[in-house]
Image (cartoon, rainbow, N blue to C red):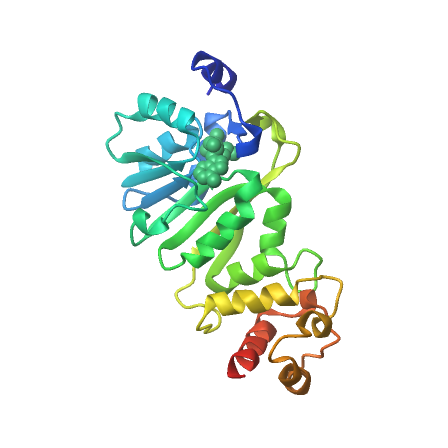
Length: 271
Ligand code: SAM
């Protein structure tokens, strides 16, 4: 796709504030769509179709595609260019505000995510796990590393915990160089894939409560969990009981495994 030419022909420009780095190479996009494994049975949601380079390929393979775009100028172009595809629907909205219930009961999410909201979209995916059966997203390489990080590593944090609780994760592509985009971003990208697990790894009754606990544990990464938890209503109970679970209060959050967070969650929820 001749991105530069298409933009200028239609009086459009790439808006940095919306993370608009458009993919230029159709055969590269085909690789990503291949990785997504989308087939004729699949209902797909795309976030940020941009100039539609991926959207068109998805619509050719999937049963139906809904593409949510925040930029109304791009939407005008998209409707003009792809309006004839009857299994494709464009929606105007903000992926972080839009009611994902509108997307239906079960779908695969595919996106070249705007970098500035990619971690928030990943959290939204987790929050909507009852609908999102799989996802294939392109994001900043560092973000993919954070999502895939293992306990004890410096990248390990809330994102890795939330995602691994519900999804089987894979790195679809490790490094995508900036020159494949227009305009070229300052950083490399990667493709992260997730498949919803048949059962969550641990039985967390309330994800928001688990999230609150994890956020508190990581509130100040350099502090111990004892210091981060100080002031919580269950603090005394934590001091007394956590060591019996093998969780010393002097540890830092990044050293705790998902299993240990689950144990802490149960301890906190009992109080
Ligand atoms: N999919 C296209 C591609 O690969 O060339 C465009 C990808 S570009 C990295 C990100 C797209 O997301 C842009 O079209 C941008 O306008 C859109 N976008 C940015 N913020 C958004 C939001 N909050 N909700 C929905 N779309 C958004």
